[in-house]
Image 1 (cartoon, rainbow, N blue to C red):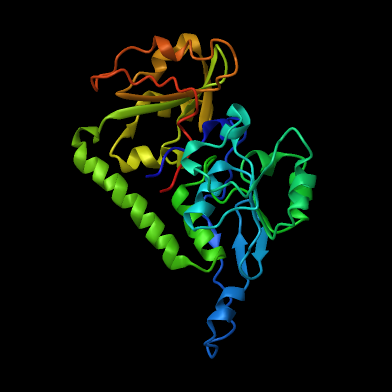
Image 2: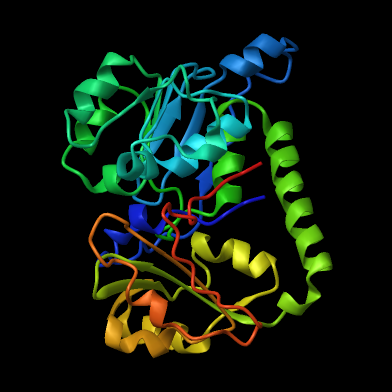
Length: 310
């Protein structure tokens, strides 16, 4: 099933205003003309993607050497059976090991370290497509990355792109729209099964927070953000007080200090933390038992918020 997008990857964008463009536009694939019947021509036709920042990116043919600079795109690529030639994963950077849900699928893929020469490392892989959301789209190296190969950053107006949009776009780029439909249907079937098994979830409130240190949290307050999609699909609704706070601050993700932990009060709290600072979990540990009948504070040694598509 689909998990949650990685808040650590997007947390650095908390102070950035949302794009005014909120619709992903994928231009029609230029199929060589109505008279052509060759399947090969369909797979070599260029795809033009119109991005929210006004850029137009054209991908010629079907890319074979894809670099994914974000766990979500890595997951999307693998769901199509495409192993990226190189990847960056925030969990791997924190823990030193590949997230277990990837198994050995990335054994032949090159991990990319942010502390090094990212552009040089990507260039050495000779990519024909770079998927660089979040941090990469805001870094000084993004322009240089885009000179190496067609480079796609944000595809929506949200800080976390909806996974369905990512799968749909990948299906368009790979000329596999039917496979994209199958992947989305499979995830939807899984979430539908969960809602049938746990009907009590419907209408319950949730909050989603990430603890960056011993006294600072980032809280999701935009119910339309990609990170909220799974909760919504399960019938949950975002706690109204965090929506109000997000509206007051004008930030899809707003910062709160640990003395304001009561703002996270809800039926379900999904919380995660960077495990490196000492005592990083202290604030979340003070959250009381939830009305759902179990302590919903999650103090994982690895971030459980990374999106997964199975």
